[in-house]
Structure formats: C-alpha cells, structure tokens
Length: 146
Image 1 (cartoon, rainbow, N blue to C red):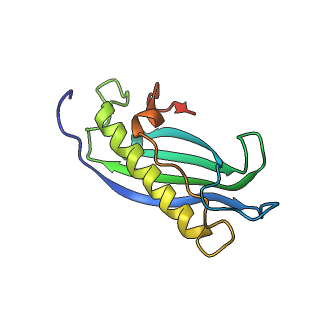
Image 2 (cartoon, rainbow, N blue to C red):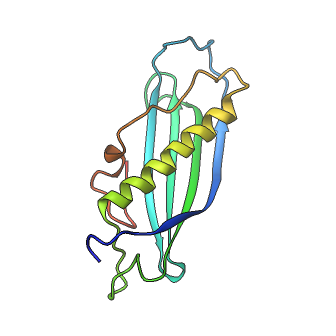
C-alpha cells in the first residue's frame, strides 16, 4: 500500500459547535489575538471514512482569556474500499494524505468562521494561516494533536 495513491472525496462538512462573545472593548485592525487550535482524526473502518475535527478559538489576549469566538467543525472524507486499512484493520494514512485532509479541514474551518462573524463586531478576528505540518505533528490516526 505504501506509495500507492489514495482516492478520497469530501463526504460532509458540519459545524459541530459555534459560540461568540462581545469583546469588552472595540477590536482594532492589526491588534494581536491568541488562537488555540486542536486537530483530531477519527477512523470509521466500517464505512472507509475518516473524520477530521478542528476545534479552534480566538482569545482577546492569550489562550487563558475567555474566547471571543470558538468553532468546532467536522469534515468526513470517504475513501475507496480497501484503501484506508491494511489486512490487520489498522488505518494506513500516509503523511502526505494526512496533510491534505488537515489542510482542507482547517482552510474550510477558517472560511466558515469568517462567514459566521463577517457581519458582526468580530469581523477582524480570523484564524491564522499556519503550516499544515504543524497541525499534524506527532499525530497518528485516532490520536489528536494540540
């Protein structure tokens, strides 16, 4: 299976949770805001699917301050029969495929968040563009990274 191309498609994208709070003071262009991002990957062997969950929040000053916005999304990817699991039923997702799944999921989450806060006082809050490799560092299927 190593080196063989994987074939997948997006099965669904859902907002699992969303919240927003009004800031204590007006937000200003260029102002620093802390972001907390967590990626979790779960496997569905029975249906040849992988669920990528992105939990993200943006805080006024640091990660310990209350979140101004928080979002959790779930993106389900469907793989071809027999491509995702080896003969021992273990998930086999090469790093390059995991990078693609994480990149699609995170970029989609950024867009959804921007759309949700676009007409509010929180329009200046955006999730940072980060290297996808940082999202999956040390991640194995069914594990999570923060």
